[in-house]
Length: 405
Image 1 (cartoon, rainbow, N blue to C red):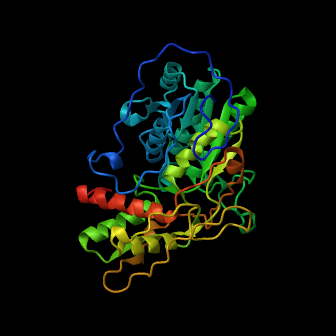
Image 2 (cartoon, rainbow, N blue to C red):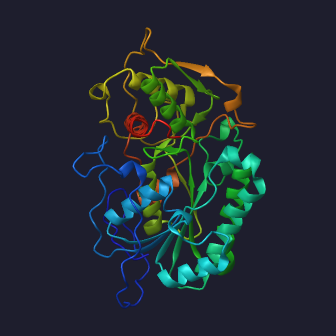
């Protein structure tokens, strides 16, 4: 994959030779700013932006599916900051549906990308139980249609974005989970992502397609939908602050997850586009876990303080928690140990059985050895920094629109 390799978070490598020079193309279509960026240009954002790399001297021509989504918006911002020529596609901006084979073929033929980041799909785990057939079609068949469209071109790298949910129930002794672990999905969503992951592998083994498979563990950050647990907790706390409430409803707080800031995740995807091994799968994760209860309590602590009291300077691997097993690597950065709020202003956590999933994985923790070894990537933003940014995002969003969900 042509492109400058001297950028933040990636080790150098020798990319494939660049294709012959082409005639200049018209500028690629641009999306409107994501909702969390729709603010006055004179007003600084409530969270400091991460240190994006300087523009590369040999930028890549990239196609991003699902560009209007949570991760897609952050990825497009990162790629453009890196100097890449980015074409965005999603249904919100009039792009073809993933299941529209002719439309996808036409788009790929027109853009002639050097790298495709495939993020589009149905990402709602809970919703997949209600719509398992549509979830499978969108995530698996949609991926196959895209791979078939790319296969007729030469020199295209595809980064497919899968999920840690494909690993399903992992024995505690097998944590942190390596990429070689068996796929044992427990939800329709996870099964659909496992199918898409294997279709990408088959495209590489059977047709020689240059595919890299990212298996992302839980990620979070400003702009995330409240269908996901950390964002849901932050939105409920922000709503309680606004309304003067003293409690929020919560689901299963005992699950432990491996969280990475979305701004670190999108750096990982570009690193894989540059330095990932063809056909390989890579966990995008920190290798540490934190319980949902700890996240909820930390958000309550942040809520009880003014913004200037919140420590947003920490960087490093996410979490206060534990690694799946003792292993070599950077130690997790602990979150500040501010005293828990007490008294009438403390927001209480009330269990709501309706918020529990039919089946839930107790512990999810990935082994990031492969991505760190092959690309040099590692997370830079602490979980505490992310939670401060996430809560502030929901505070501002609800101040503008109290009915926002």
